[in-house]
Length: 151
Image (cartoon, rainbow, N blue to C red; front, side, top):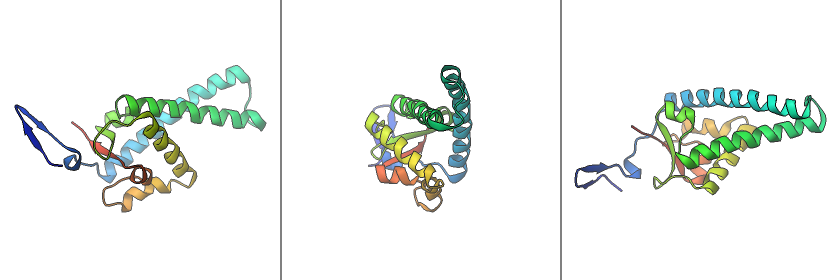
């Protein structure tokens, strides 16, 4: 696709939308980490208030699952609603499908699941952006999503 001219508007189509560089992606990931830490502190406190100490046994596993679900709800809500998390808004980034559409709930869930698996494997899926010619994370390459610059 290319830039099309309509009366009094200029529309950027998916192939012409600029992609962020490594610095912007890295800065956004750092901001995302701070958001995750804040959410984890708040919701770990809630879990502690409801269920008590969760430093060992089944409570620890349940707390980890609880935090993964809560953080997942945050990401899914952001990606489906606007395509942007708080960090992405600050850095003027947006996640879209390869054709420029908003992520569906299923696509957002798949993205969260694969991004989580990437973290389990030492963040290799995120490091993939260093060698990817389009600066895509591995999970975005697999799922045909991309992060674009806006504004």
